[in-house]
Structure formats: structure tokens, C-alpha cells
Image (tube, rainbow, N blue to C red):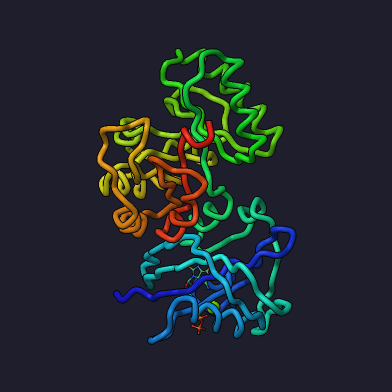
Length: 309
Ligand SMILES: Nc1nc2c([nH]c(=O)n2[C@H]2C[C@H](O)[C@@H](COP(=O)(O)OP(=O)(O)OP(=O)(O)O)O2)c(=O)[nH]1
Ligand SMILES: [Mg+2]
């Protein structure tokens, strides 16, 4: 079956609310909400198609785009490649030119709207930040908490608590305190821990071993964020099968914490993100300076320790 290439636009207003539209009842995936857009016509670039579709459907003129995510999905009756871009600037007032209902919703409200199945990774990508901070070394619990506070003050919105040297009980106690601080600042916490043990956090991060040991996503983790560390195509296929919410792909560049690992480079990173069905963070030698490069290579953004801890 031929894949239909679809240009999809994420339009945000001054308050950070995102424009969604209801698909006509009779259309493919009809009656569900969507991000506006449509098929790329022969000879068009994705940006040209998006500019045309957003004018046809909404009466707005869009000029500047940043990639969000690419999702290929097989509906059985149709295969689509959704090429999703954030609209950086537009002029005009959005109206439903084809009679379609429109709604402006905050990223956290997106989960309560029924979207086509292919859209769930898009919703994840819109809810996740473009920087994920992993905790590094600390000599004591107070030092760890002080470093977490500093990361939060500098704007971290998603942290991963990683402390393999701590015993399970001490780790869980520390995680509770870090979680309280994150929530106070409107940030989320995932913990790098055994997902079969009880824990309180917004989600769990699987290291390579735990990713390979997991045969299906445990029902207890259905509503939590579940991510994993990937280093190969095989790992990404496994993460796709498990339906994970995000992955790390590493090492993209030489990194201080893993000096002997061979870096992938951005070209290989882009090839890998093309078949990942979830947001992908570039890890290994990353800093804020690499966020745009990571997005242009199909990633969600960057993750790391050294630049922020
Ligand atoms: N625009 C859009 N399409 C989506 C989303 N999610 C999703 O699975 N799709 C699918 C549904 C359709 O099979 C295809 C897009 O088709 P479309 O109906 O928007 O195409 P179009 O605007 O060119 O419309 P038409 O000329 O065919 O009427 O992609 C989404 O968020 N936005
Ligand atoms: Mg359309």
C-alpha cells in the first residue's frame, strides 16, 4: 500500500494554546480531532503543502516552521506519514473555512480529546519539553536536592533521577523528595528504576537491560511516562513494540560520561528517528546549543547530565 504523505501544522496562540479541528464525520478517521493539514501534492515541499492547506482550511498565512515529529502509521485501510511542524509565525484569524469546529487547547488538555491513533506520539511530543535533565553525581542527599533546585530554577521541566549507587529504599525516599520539588515548580520527574517495584513519580526510565527484559508495557504503567535508553535499531524496534512514550538515542556526540562509546553523529541519528514511533532525545555530549539541530534531525530535543547538573 502506498504511504500518503501528510503535512500537519501545530499552531499556537500567545497563551500557548494549540489549535485543533474536528474532522468531518465522513472523512477517513472522521469525527475525531486533528491538527490541521492535508496531503502533500506532487511537486510540493512539506512546507509548501502546509502553507497551502492551512490557508485552505483556516484562512491563515503561515511562514516559519520548526519540525516536531514524523510518524508513519498503518491504519489497515490506509498508510500515512504525518510530517508535523510547529508554525512559528502566522497572520490572520483562524476560522473553520470548511465548516469544521475549531478549539484552542493547552498542551495538558490534549489528552482529553479523541484523536486518530497516529496522533498519540504527536500529543506526547507537544507535552514533553525539548530538554531532559538527567541527575549526575552527588555526595549527599542535601547536595542532590540543592542541585535539583538549581536545575528547576534554570527552567528544567522534565528530570530523570538516576542514582545507581543508592539502595532501592534510599533511592525511593530521595525520589519522593525530588518529586515534591519538581511538582512545586511545574516540572515532571521520571525515575531510572526497576518498574516492577512500587514507586511514586510521573514515570519510569528503562535502562538498556530493563528495556530488553520487558516483554510488554505493564498495565500499571499505562498512564505514566515510560521511556528507555536506546543505542541501536533493534532497541528502537523494541521501544516501538512496547509503545513507549519517549526514548533516548545515544551517544550522538562524544560524551564525558561514556568516553569509549563510538558516537553515532547526526546523520545516523536522523535515520534512526525516522522509524521511532515516539519522541527521541539526543543524548551524549549535548547542551542547549544542540536543541535545534536535534529537532531538524527529527528529534524531540536533547538529554544529558554534564551541561545542566
Ligand atoms: N490533517 C491531519 N490528518 C491526520 C491527522 N492524524 C491522522 O491520522 N491524519 C490522517 C487522516 C487522513 O488519512 C490523512 C490526512 O488527510 P486530510 O483529510 O487532512 O487531507 P486533505 O486535507 O488533503 O483532505 P482532502 O483533500 O483529501 O479532503 O492523515 C492529523 O492530526 N491531521
Ligand atoms: Mg485536511
